[in-house]
Picture 1 (cartoon, one colour):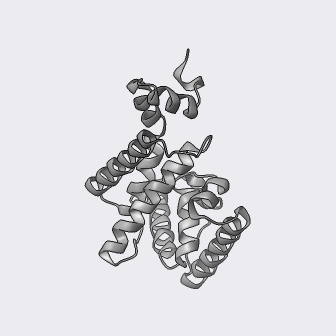
Picture 2: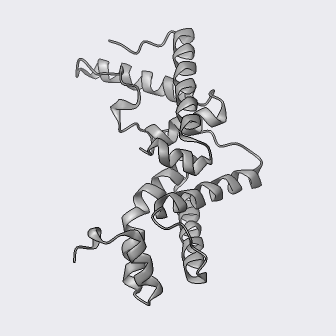
Length: 196
């Protein structure tokens, strides 16, 4: 049977019955998404590795103790653990993370950012625009910034964001809407050109 056809819950059940390969499959299935989120926020590979490891240690300990009750919502549960560990880390440092992305893979982050001409000059200009917009994101209120980053940089659904941040989907959507409104205002004030 193809492992990807097996549900997360079935893999959990198999692991608890003694099949340790099922745990490996479960971790492999979700590791990229979890690690990408942690790295995006902490911006340090060694720290991200540590928090990622700590996340899955908590997952394993919870599964082994028999207290896991999130049937059908495994990835949201894991993302919540990772999110809480990241928050705990920054609380210990007594500072709020400032996210500064080195690269933006998705051009749909702001749909009106489009490269019309492939010249070197145009690419340099567009990179500067992306950099300016990334800097402006840091000026958003924390809850708006968080939703925007989860949505556009971690490719999370609003349902997942709502569950992870413990708010309703409407609240998550509202925060995203206000984040975009505020970004547009700041872009206008800073006179950053988003169109060629």
